[in-house]
Length: 133
Image (cartoon, rainbow, N blue to C red; front, side, top):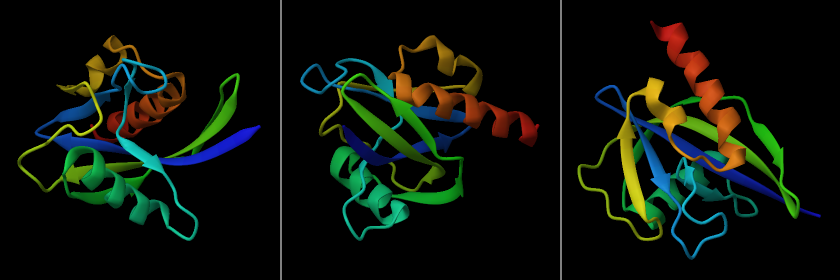
């Protein structure tokens, strides 16, 4: 069975968090996720995240903190997510792959229809948020 290692960015700006909606042409169409992508051989998770965010959204981020790695088993493959809390360093976001974006307060993240693998990342992020209050 295929096992993917993928980075994801929890991008914060002005108290809000960025979520990206997968396009209808992607696997898990129209599900919401934290943007990121597959780690290439020899690439660090941080290098991957920076590369993927430029490719997907034309943005630069500051990587602030890593969260615990999470593995989810889908019926056809497994995915291990390497999440990072990031700050946005770019003003304009250009969608190259996703259908939509949403900026939400952390408490409203559960209102979206997330890809299953991203739900433990939402949980982990919200625990960190509570620790900041």
